[in-house]
Image: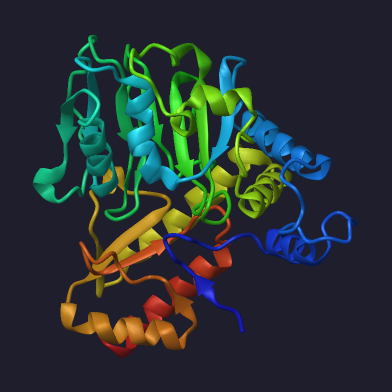
Amino acid sequence: MQVHNFNAGPSMLPNEVLYKASKALIDFDGLGMSILEISHRSEAFLQVMAEARQLVRELLQLDEDFEVLFLHGGASTQFMQVPYNLLDTGETAGYLDTGVWANRALKEARLFGNVEVIASSADRNYCYIPKSFTVPKHLKYLHITTNNTIYGTQWHQIPEVEVPLVADMSSDIFSRQLDFNKFALIYAGAQKNMGPAGVTLVVVRKSILGKVSRLIPTMLDYRVHIQHESIYNTPPVFAVYISMLTLRWLKEQGGIAAIEKRNEEKAALLYREIDENPLFKGTADPADRSRMNVCFVMNDPSLEKEFLEFCKKEDIVGIKGHRLVGGFRASIYNAMPIESVEYLVESMRYFARTHG
């Protein structure tokens, strides 16, 4: 049975990656042991970690000041770990409040220093990206969330600022070309575009670390993880391995430039149907629509339950909207083939023909 998996995360992975991972569950690299059984300090896994880190560096085209880390705790831990390492008592960080995750990040930062909300789209339930704002030069850093999974908005123009720029890229990392060297720190949970839940990517400039006066617990100090090349303690071995396979797959597809074109095609196809189909309408401002998470509702809310049941029968899964906004959400990350988007579009057309 073919299922069209539009889940927001954990999300679908490339079939090639799943096939290779399934073989490694039985016998990894001819060792006669599962990837789940090998030592995290064995030469076999050290090579996996080294390749994963190098692929990140290569795909993002990072300069030499960056370090690449694979850590525990998800992006939610980074809400706290970023200010713990970067924001001293009495200093001020700026945050752009564009959704639930951005809001949670700024609340955590207030435990460590001052937070100035530079701009917010909360006034319209986060359906747009703020455009006009001034970033004070005294800020220790500016934090943005580049893509908002719940509301379906995305920063298409990254702010040009004179302070260090920190970004939560959990839901659009590796999906589009950017000048990643303009950021001071990037973090991302793996379970959207990079791998399974359980590992978090952090890309950080070494030059911004070691400037706070507080003592930092060992496990929360980026410098410790840099020194130990992401193996200070036992890492999530399987999650790192699948992330490495996914990054390999991305490189084989032609890298970020090639996948960006596919993502643009998929998003354009689905948004066109939403705009033209009389039963549906988008919820995010058109200029700020996400290419990763397409959010929409029905003009007649009484049909929503029936449409969900119809999708279930058609093996379309994961399109129910987040509980905070309702409606529908189709997540079309890197691994989503355009054929599944075409199938969803055809299903929407059929439903409209039979309910017109």
